[in-house]
Structure formats: structure tokens, C-alpha cells
Image (tube, rainbow, N blue to C red; front, side, top):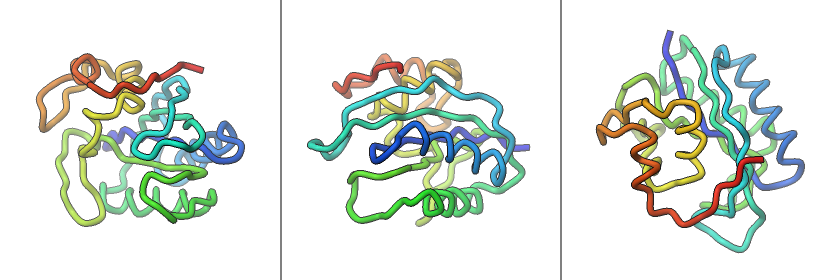
Length: 159
């Protein structure tokens, strides 16, 4: 069994309900949910002037290889109503694969570890909550160290 760390979030509609739907579909189709972080609210990152996001990290145990898992996560996003109109734009749900075991993948479809983890406080805060000692396979630092080093000024509030 493989261990995947997923960041789910969104800023449109009933944000809590979309997070719930994502957790349910991931648990039904992608693997067994092992750990769930608290839910956090953060101002939009990358494109300001839109509603705040709710974000949460979940850890799953899965037998699905990373590329196929990414395809499945994209289909779950679509099922929940995700429309890809603009980069960093508003969305009902976004599912990012942050880590997959200690593997490194770089293809057109999937980059693991997620290339922006160290720059995004909204990903690092929930990661540090549930996996503070997990070591980033490329950077050699724990999630907690990455959070302490992060220069992202956005406030991440636990809900």
C-alpha cells in the first residue's frame, strides 16, 4: 500500500460541503482515508480579489500508482463541478497530490512532491499539523521546518 498526502480546497459555493464530497469520493474511489487535518481558511493565493479558500490535508492508503491516482483525482474534481477556466481562479474544489510515499515524479500530468509546497503556508500548516516530521524527498526538510522557513505572508486560520 502507498501513502498519498492530498490537499483539498475551494472557494466557491458551500465550501464545507465540497470538502465533504471530496473526502467521501476519495475514500470511495481512491483509497482508505487514514488521517484528516483540521480545516483552515486562507485568502486566495496567486490571484487575489476572490473569496477565501477552505483547505484541508488528507492522507490516504492506496494501491493506485501515482499517475493513475492523479487522473482519478481530476475526475473527482470534475464530478464535484470543477471548471478549469483560469489559473489560480475560483473553484468549487481543487485536489492536489502533495506527496506519494517518498517518490519523485515529474511528468506532464503529475509532479510529486508538489512543486509549490514550500511556498504555500495554506498547504504547510495542515501538513505540519498531521505530519510534522515527514521529510520532503527533494528538499530534505520536515514539513515543520518548511513551515518555519516559509515566506508566504497569508494568514492561515483554523476553523
